[in-house]
Image (tube, rainbow, N blue to C red; front, top):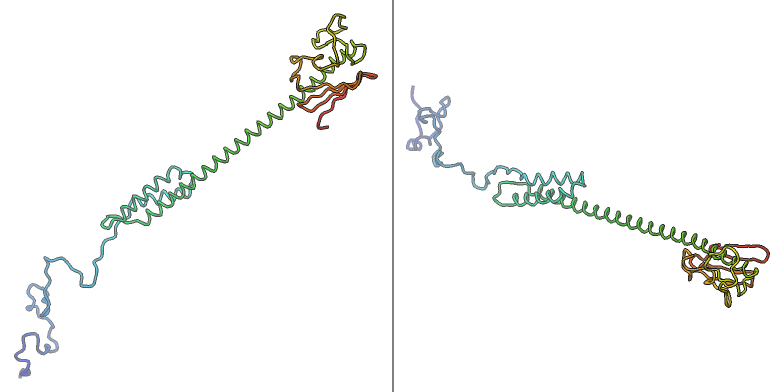
Length: 277
C-alpha cells in the first residue's frame, strides 16, 4: 500500500508544525513526554517549582481576613449593656469608652493584625453617651431631692413660725386677762373707779384691800402701775392701756393685734377681739 505523500512545502518544517496527524492517531504520544510531564508548547516557559506563585498582571493577591479586635467587641458589648441597663453606665461607661478607643487604635494601624474600627467606634459612642446621660439624670435627681429638701425645710420653718405666732397669740390673750384682773382689783380698791389715787397693784401680792400706807397712783393710771415684765409672757412694750372714763378701758396687745374691752358700769363685762375679726 502506497504511503501518502506530503507536500514539498511541509517536508522541511520542524516536527510538530506540519499537517495534523491522520484520523485515529492519538493526539499525544506517551514517548513524547517522558515521566508523564507536560511539555509546554514552543515559546512558553515551563513551570519552575522553586519559584512561588505569582498572580497574573492586573490582578491583586487575595489577603486573608483579619480577626476583629477583642477590645472593640468588648466596647460594643459594654455599650449595649449601658443602653439597656442605663444605671450601670455610671461605672461601665468609662470602661466601655476606654475599650472602644483602644480597639479603634488597634484596628486603625495599617499593618495591624486586627479589624473592627467601626465596632470600637460604636461601642465608644454608646458608652460615652449613656455615661453622660446617666450623669445628667443623677444631677437632675440630686437637684430635685435638694429642692424638695429645701422646700420641706422652709415648710417646717413656716409651720414653726405659725405655731410660734399661735403661741404668742395665746400668751397675749393670757396676759390681757391677767392685766384686766389687776385693773379690776384697782377698780375695787379705788372705790369702784379707774380715776387716779388708787393703790399701785403691780406687786400682785394682796388679795384684799391695800393698807392706807400703800403707794398710791399719782396722775392717770398706767400699765406700769398694774403689772411688771416678769408678770407677763411677753414684754411690757407689747401692751397698752387706754382709759375710757372711770369705768371703761381698752387693753391692747400689739404683737397679735388682740384687744380686750373692759366695762365696769353695771357688771364686770369683758370682751376680747382679735384683729382678724
